[in-house]
Image (cartoon, rainbow, N blue to C red):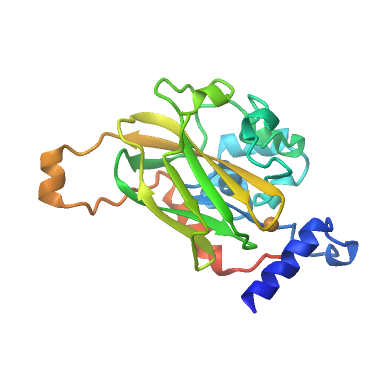
Length: 250
Ligand SMILES: [Cu+2]
């Protein structure tokens, strides 16, 4: 059943969505990172308090009218692993899609999630329509400046996490991993989801603030139960809470 539904969804995607299915339906829907929250999810209709931030208001104003209602549709067909060739510097957060240009705005005040560098963390990528594929997450190099346009060279070369076909739990792909170590202050986590069941690749920018790692002694004493907190926790929980709501209509 699930497989059949997924195949049907993929077929609609490939067919550019017949007009019939667009009538008053939700925007075409696929996914975005919600933990730590991505710019698109934070500024979308389920972003809660974060969506009312100055950064989101600016992003909405700079993007095509209503574009961020489709916060889960930052997808580019046919990239096939050539991300660095296809997506131009300065346009990483929009995936090079003009209608999402507001997500590329260089600013220091994007809604950000506070995380402990080097800690265990469960990443959640909300899937409004499931697809198979591989997630790769990159972090910005030391010295990252959010007030400058994001370039490929600002990202570390290798992903700190790579997962193929993670488990779908309560509407989100769930990936247990470890946050990059040795990071402090504001950084950006860049997520690339290359589908294997569709020709699409999805791009997400998540703004984060890293706090210092625990010392080895502290880890030994406390164990490894540190739960990262979110500076805009209301937005995160709202995004997560709505994970069960189906907006899928590819
Ligand atoms: Cu999709």
